[in-house]
Length: 235
Image 1 (cartoon, rainbow, N blue to C red):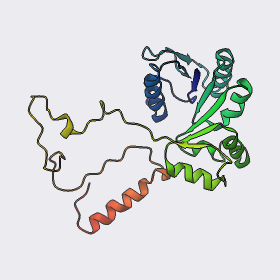
Image 2: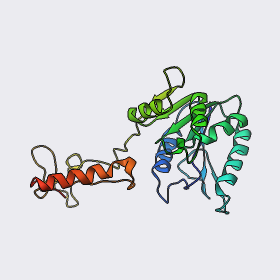
Image 3: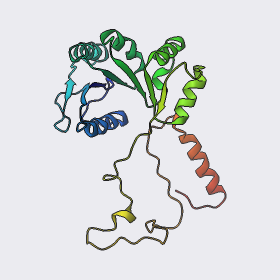
Image 4: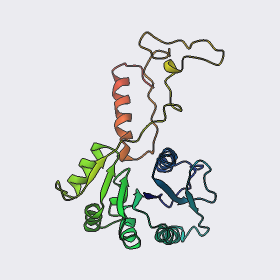
């Protein structure tokens, strides 16, 4: 089986400039590289193929003004040559119709990390709904996102084919201190009876993400304000 994964046009893979979608795709394709009877080809912005991927076609676009249009034209040409059985379009729903034309016999899967690119800045509501209904599967990264899309575009059961797949965590990279159990000097790290690391008094909250309303940062700030008003130590 030939599977082509199409990355967005904004940031390169390997994710040397970051990007949550790029990091996600890089890890997924690395894991799928060893799958039996499946060839996964990642098409993404970049200048050099990743040695950790079995099949990676980086597309270098020099003209920033024409980056999106040029990148997509080159991607569609590559897809025609590959002739994949499945095309996985990541977070760019407006690319689905063009992929349908380039690969008429392929199944097209749309993977959505948010509803941003279904919005009116990118697609008319009727066009977005048609794309969601035309995809062979729409992968949502949470049940919340699936419900939100279905409600917004009035998608009844059977009108589209949603699947919820939560992003995974690399447990080798993100390991709780209590599980790691060793400091640099080889001694066990001090932990509480709950298994949590010893820390100063008070609650410390860490937010990681873009500072936009959709992420709910304003809710976090208001919660901290209310806790402090009640005398709860929180940073």
